[in-house]
Amino acid sequence: MLNSQLTTVSINASVVPIDMAGGILGQAGYTAFAFDQSGFKLATNGTMEFDSADFVSLTAAQREALVLHEMAHVLGFGTLWTDNGVYLNESGEFTGANATAAWQSEFGQNGTPDVELAGGPGTANGHWNEFDNGAGLTGITDGLGRDMTFELMTGWLNVGPEDPFISELTLASFRDIGFTTANATAVPEPGTGGVLVAGLAVGMGWRRRRSLAEK
Image 1 (spheres, rainbow, N blue to C red):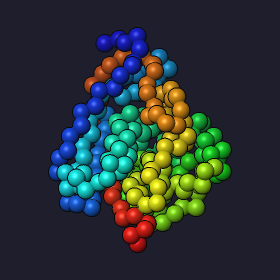
Image 2 (image 1 turned 60 degrees about the horizontal axis):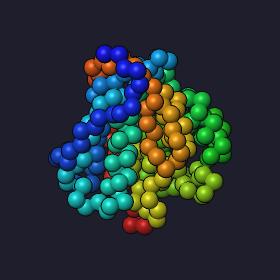
Image 3 (image 1 turned 180 degrees about the vertical axis):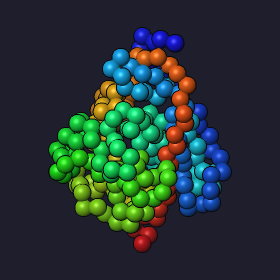
């Protein structure tokens, strides 16, 4: 089926048992995709599942962050990196030009953005890097002084002194896989057409951790 423009992504969401409380908060992935005229592979459909053992205990802010995080996985964060040529599995380095520029300008770092290699399937190779289990601050901060450990797309949910934030780094990574983005207050939306074909669901999850204030 040939589409002149891809304007929507359909996502099914549900609260279901995943594991015991304190483990995986949610998991998500695309279930169908389209190729645009430039050859980018874009998600058109996906699913999100939230763990019933944890979801009821989350605050409203934590639930919002969790939904946005899993939605980003449906749209391709971590799940479509390899297919779009911006990540070599197990390399730990995201090579997209837009995200690399943001990594250097927003966080003052050299080289390419660091990708998580720990945490097991569903966490490794699909998130920005931080200390295992979110054990402490990374020391990598943006211009507002926000530590990378609080960024929305790291592998563990931080419920510390501030809510997770969406960095320009994350938005730039979506531009690297064929999306257009408006600003740092919105989740990226696809803006190109393609041929709709059946896709393989690729799951990514977000694990829970205690607040720094609780340690």
